[in-house]
Each structure stands twice: as structure tokens, then as C-alpha cells.
Image (cartoon, rainbow, N blue to C red):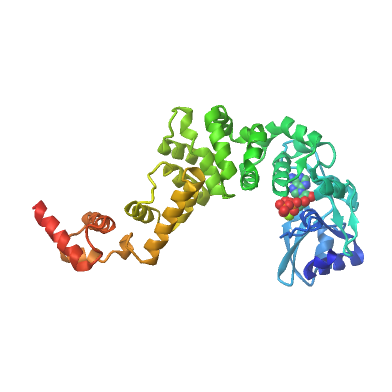
Amino acid sequence: MHNQIPKQIKTCLNELNQKYEAVLVGGYVRDALLGRKSKDYDIATSATPEQVKEVFKRYTTFDSGIKHGTVTVVIDLHPVEITTYRIESGYSDSRHPDQIEFTTVLKKDCMRRDFTINAICMKQDGELIDYFEGQEDLKNKIIRCVGNPKERFYEDALRIMRAIRFSATLGFEIEPETKAALFGERQNLRKISMERFIQEFQKIVVAEQFDHLLNEYLDVFSVMIPELKQLSEIPAVWNRILNDLHDSPAVLTYRLALIFLHLSRFNADKIIPMQSASTFLMLAKRLRMNNEVTGTVARFIQNSQIELTPDKVLVKKRLNQFGDSFFDYLGFRKAYDLNEDIYDKISKQVSDIIGRQECFSLKQLAINGSDLKQMGITGTKVSSTLNQCLLWVIEGQVDNNKYKLLDKLNETLKGRN
Ligand code: ATP
Ligand code: MG
């Protein structure tokens, strides 16, 4: 298995092992043992950051997290993170250790790691060092804290979310004592930063079986997102959400919209899309969700109830309204309320419209602003007139032909005077 270790990582381990001790640890080892690919490599070493820099003095190094003992070395243009073995203590704020102490004892470094499956080390030659029976837990598909779970979750509450995330992405069970502690210590989540929370939450949202996880860990997520608890208190709404999530593809924006489009139901038994969308925008801001995700979800929510049938004129109007994001929106509607047959018919119409280059947008319209100016139409009238012409074309009242359009316009203008 160590043959899969990339050259630059081997070089790194080799250089350090001349004078000190260095091993691979964490995600890489876990994923390699599971036969999965992993993107980042964590190297742990007995060398202090200064010593690491000395070893790699011929290379470019960055003090990427020197306070925490991390130095980044660039080898063959690849950044490699090397962290000194460390002991953490006194997490009085449930987010940062009060003290970090370097050590030369690997076991002590492993003790600060979150889960047994994340504390397995691999030496340069592939030999494993496993102080906490991580391999056994990997085999049995179990997430278990290193040490006392209550203490570990109190020290750093992000570990609560990491436990759920690893269980979700790997399909592992959380060991009962670890699970009980995760619920017991959940209020500590308030002390971690929103960015760290939401990052983990979003990874959980796109996991397989998110519907089950949402139900099971509702009390945990609700510490930071109380709206979830409120939604769960209306059984019909909650069942609908869980069913929709069950059938939804693993797309973050779809799943968030499927949950939060019901936000207006707190005050009404009907969904009021504008109200749900604006409540969601406030929620997303509080949760520090990124702008792109927030914008897309709000748009899905806002348009969740608009008419969408396999009617060609209507489909063209929607294409004009959504532009390039129409397929994404259509996917959301399929996850929410469109049946397979309707979805297929609409998709077919879209391919036909695009394949035949039928006009559904101003860009494709046979006349433009300067044509209107020549007719004496100026100012804000230009855009409203162009949109009127587009509507005629979409509705089949006139062909998308410059002269026919101008004729119809002239006629209409005359009629008004
Ligand atoms: P992935 O990168 O696939 O999300 P990972 O296990 O590599 O998973 P990282 O966040 O890259 O996770 O952290 C690397 C290692 O550092 C972990 O495997 C774990 O040993 C340790 N670690 C990370 N975060 C914590 C934490 N909050 N508490 C304790 N140990 C942690
Ligand atoms: Mg990692």
C-alpha cells in the first residue's frame, strides 16, 4: 500500500527520518486502508518546526501554522504539510486548546486526535502504528473517540460534527458511548465558529441517507439551526421534507431548498415562497453560507410554486427567465414536485427548442435596441418594447423576423395613437 504514496511524500518522510521520526497519519492512512483515494497528506514528526525548516533548507518552506507546529514544504511543486507531534491541553472555550506543547512521543500526538480511525500512523515502509485499535474500528465500521468522548467533545465541539460527517460519508456507525456524548455535549457547538460548523453541516447534507441523519441528529443540528426543530414540530411538513430528501439527488442547493422552502409554514398552512425565501436569506447570513449557494437556494425557494408544465410557450418563458441555470432549476423541481413523465417531456421540449434554435431570449430576437431607436423609441421604453416583441415571438404571434416584427410594432403603435 505504501507504494501508492506519492514520490514527494516519500522524499519528505525519508529526509526527516534521517535525523528524526516522521510518519503519515490521519485521513490519508484511513482512506488508504479503506481503499479510497485521499487528496491531502498529513505528516507528523518528532522534529520541531525549526528543525523541519533546517532539514528542508534547500526547499521552499512556509510557516503555514507555525504556532500549531505546522510547516509547509514545497517538493516538486507540491505543498506538503508537516506538523510536529504535539500535546493539546485546557480547552476552556471548547474551540481552541489553551496550550500546545511539542513532544517527541508519537503516542501523545495520537492521543489528541479525534477518532481511532484518524489516529492510525503509517511509517515510510508501510508499517502501521495503531495505538487505539483504529484498524479494528475500521474493520467494524465504527467511529469511536480516542479517550473519553465527553471530554473530547467538550474540548472541541467541532468533533461532534466531524463524528456525524465521518459516519455519513463512510457509512459507519457511531459507537454508543461516543454517540451518547455527542448528544450530551451538543450545546458546546455554540462555542465554535459558524464557518467551521456550516462547513461540516454542508458535507453532511450531501451524504447518502441524509434524510435519516437529519432525523437522528435533529437535536444536534438544531442547536445552531433551531428552524429545523420548528419544522419538525409540524408532522406533515417534516414527513414531506424527509421524503423529498430521500428521493433527492445529493445536490447541496436542492436539499437546502427542499428543507427551507417550508419556512413560511410556521405562520401559515400554505407555503408563501417570498416569505420562505426572505427568511432563508436571513438564516443563510447568520450561518455564513457562501453567497453563491445562498443565492441559488433562495431562487429555488422563491420559484418553487411557479407553474411548470410541458407547454412549449411556458417552457420558453422559463428558459428566458432562468437562462443557463434552467436545467439546474428543473432538477430541483424534479426533486420537489415534478413527476418523471412531466420532467421528461419538459426536458425533451428544451432540447427541441435549443436544437432548432427557436427564440426564447432577447439575445436571439431578430431586432435590437438600435432598430427601435430608428423608430424613435428611446429610454426605458426600449427594454419594455423589446420584451413585448420577445413575448409575441414566444407566443407565436409573429415570426422572429426583423421586418415582420417591425411591421407588427408599427401597427401596434398606430393603434395606440
Ligand atoms: P478529510 O481531510 O478527508 O476531511 P481528515 O481526517 O484528513 O479527513 P483533516 O481535517 O484533514 O481530516 O485532519 C487531519 C487529521 O487531524 C485528522 O485525521 C485527525 O487525526 C486530526 N484532527 C483534525 N481535526 C481534529 C479535531 N477537531 N480534533 C482532533 N483531531 C483532529
Ligand atoms: Mg485531511
